[in-house]
Length: 340
Image 1 (tube, helix red, strand yellow):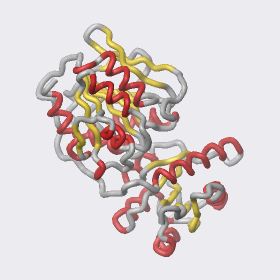
Image 2 (cartoon, helix red, strand yellow; image 1 turned 60 degrees about the vertical axis):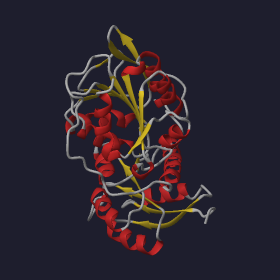
Image 3 (tube, rainbow, N blue to C red; image 1 turned 90 degrees about the vertical axis):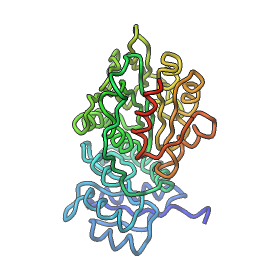
Image 4 (tube, rainbow, N blue to C red; image 1 turned 45 degrees about the horizontal axis):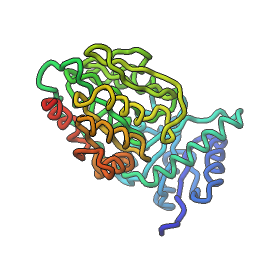
């Protein structure tokens, strides 16, 4: 039913955290906690019995950890999962296994920390309830640009919910011979550096969390820090990035619109803009500006988006020239590079 509440199952081996998350979720009238499980085996039975719309799942659990549980759960019961974790790279393993998003466990001794995290969980449960859960798309080839890339070419990517895995798959399939790539992914501050390290270790690109003044070079990827806006400016025939503090735009810092607007201003027809899965409208107007300045603009299609929000709005306002399924995005980018 249209006004039915979102049914949530909470999984955590800690009674304290189970209660913190469950009681926090129940403060929102749109959410109903239908069960609380202490481990993966108890959770399996509860999923069958309660048929939740969303599951929150602790990563570190006895008997079977959350990552293995998510990996086994997805083929049998494809329900959106929000991973709950301490500060570590395991959140990205959970996303690779099939989780749609994650939150950092609160410090139970700090009421402010608990309140902040509960607010995040509530927001992400609502987004996850609209998410599409599908088997992983695996690429099999590296797509290049057809030769050395001029230094005045550039690729910009913006993403939110579901974006970490989408970006990972695109970089896996792209050849490091492509122009420099700049990325804004909506991600908590403490995780942007870990995300960059993971991509650096698991792809052929040189990936780092951006620092003010970094050059955008072929074979390199710069990830905007989780709490600062990033924009591009031109230095001779090369591009550099500028990081700055500022109010949120479209509810986000960093904002995809900030990056794309700067690319429209300084890169023009030498740029490719790509907007990927995510909730909201961040990036749509910036991508439209890029297109109006001659850039090639691509958007992830609905069928492969975890949340078809950002690319949908960008398509509807005419910012996206071509909608592309995620498994074909790297090849499409490589093909487009031959045209600029």
